[in-house]
Length: 416
Image (cartoon, rainbow, N blue to C red; front, side, top):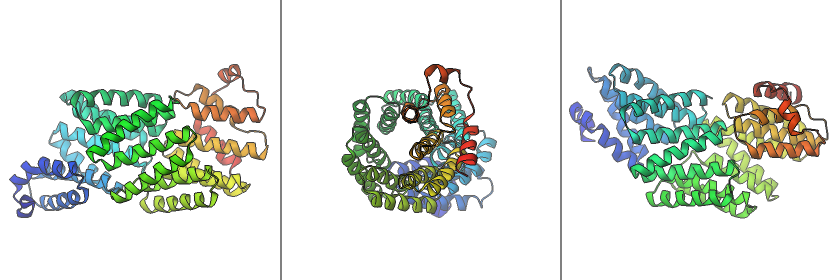
């Protein structure tokens, strides 16, 4: 701090890494933001310190990310990139690519999951070229999360296994915790045995608590909630989410709170507590709009549409589903889009009308490379209830329409 205050550029340059590690490892994100913001503002006014400015901006962007300041993060990464490229700082270029891709992947703010994935792959290539196993492991972990958000659960699981192996080899416990938790979440989506997922989540949670990693603890508790739901224990699921919500608030984590309120809405609705569920969904929606977390918006809108549909209010339900599909497709959230379509299919069943899109959607799922067994099986059950003749042979031979065409048809012909 003395170096920044005194504008001793040599001391700042030599201290950036130490200062960053001191703040980041102790999760002093607000203090780190203030410190590095002061340093960057001072350094940018001095000639000949372009590299220092770039490094300070890169570090500042990571603190802003952890504070949920998405736009500010992306802008700082954008500003530092040309300076790093001109100085030919390959390691820092890799860091910039990794953090930019990670930010895009986690917020969905710009709907650029594909671009985020490409940036993470470029960052990985740089770290592989430099023989930096630690940052290779980090890039793989971020890639796994990106693929999870895109709905490619099988590929995400393979990538996360690679990340875990590298973190195990390096003895990096926080990386092991992150990989274990993500693999536990993926196990639930891939219909692996619930006990296997629970063991991964509990192992990751134990590590996260010991290492005092609040965001990891929060995510692990969410995963255990969904595992409890899979086993039919909704009250335990609610308890886990309440614990995660309390932990997020106590730790100053605002990012997970909207999603956790949404989860509480889902579980309480399944327990028959409709009014409470609506309250949770509305509170989640308010925070999502306030914070600009568009990546969470489609899920909450789908849940609100589901509530309206089940009350027989098909007009409001259709409007919620329509908006959810528009946002989910824009943000490349394939899994979320398919979940919304499955709820639209349930609305068709409830209204006892012939399905206009379910056969085409099932043909798409049958041929799609993504592994989404739960959604596919749910839609097959709906098709069976509607007496649709969808034999495996018929699905295998059916023409495959792009998902974009199916979404457009549902939005413009059914939900308009």
